[in-house]
Length: 553
Image 1 (cartoon, one colour):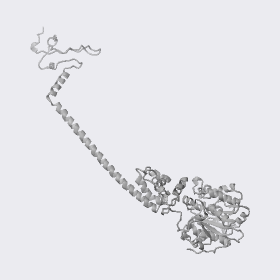
Image 2: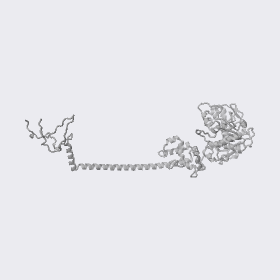
Image 3: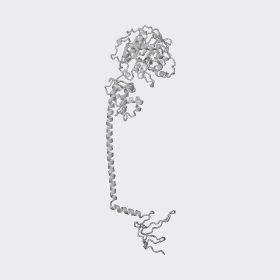
Image 4: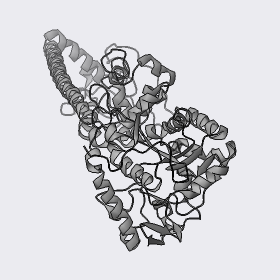
């Protein structure tokens, strides 16, 4: 571990400003905190420096070797700290602790004038303007910009600044007084559940709340000096940077500190990962020297070594990493959170972790975690509209393949997800086997029913054919056929034996006779009368053999 570059200093400063400095980090940003505090102490000899660890030491550092005093968040005695540590990510927690930390230093560590700096700051000259401002004011703020931004289609733009807040809280100066303590009490209460980085809810960590401070509290001073809080968001109005002895001048004024927000040690050319307006090569030699000097300072402070240190509040006690959306889910439970006790614990049946991994409803194959994952991702919900039925296996396959890189659920989460997927695949195989068996059984039953129906039809046809071939049936059919043939088209009846045989009889033209005596008895003939458009029907006579036809006279 690195040895300190600056010896611990006495509590009373002698630089004329009477300022103390503080910052807040997790262990991974300890290298940045070293640069920040060492640079401040270099230009404010005799000052005190404090670092709040929004984390746990866990044996990874020796506070006695540092040039600043280290406090842990749990030492502040914040009520409900465990809830804060779980519901906020590391950035949100660090900012949520800020008013509590500042109030602790003013009230309990006998600090009268205090400067807060973000850890990614390097100080280049004494903050004389701040010391002077605190003579008359209780609170000193710096705005993000001092003039309108160009509407050039680049980021950040003024809407981005509206979402982030008017004032950048990488700097704040306070004098111990009634207005400053009132500000801290109010701010602390708002950050209990209002420090989320969530612009959609009107929130951006601790910063957005400070928009209200000038109207809420007296003694607020807005410092409009270009040498304070120079950063990527205001570079377009502070492009003129020049060397000045051991320091720098910006737009003709001393550069007090530069805020390297979004700094990327391995990509200095980007200036910041949060902007796309400038490349470092666009800004000239002085800015390249400024950024290169900061990179060397970080290297000397062990930045790469500390960057790999873990975050104590980043995982459940079983090692499963806590993704941001799970933190939000926990917060949104409201008063129900109290039922779970310590949210980091996993060994109890009534723990938050057990609730999270339990089925989201009785009999469901999906956990509350997986349902929340799907709710967070509209594209996933659209791709798997039936995750508990037809799309269950496909959805669980997506969870295994994509929840790690896309949802922050890597490591031990994946073991659980794979087990669940294997079980679902096995269950689907069983279900498919049962469905196949059911289909085969149904097909066999249908085949048997068809065969029985066919046999019934064949038997009926055979019975019909046998009945048609019997003698009694033949005589009955002949009687029916004869009766049908003996009936004329207009309903008149004639005997079947009276069929005309033109080969054995002849009719003399013009001969008429009375056939009533010759006709065999039969049913009476119904009277007929021709209709208006029908010819009268001629009565059929029985033909006689030619030998019986009387000779004509």
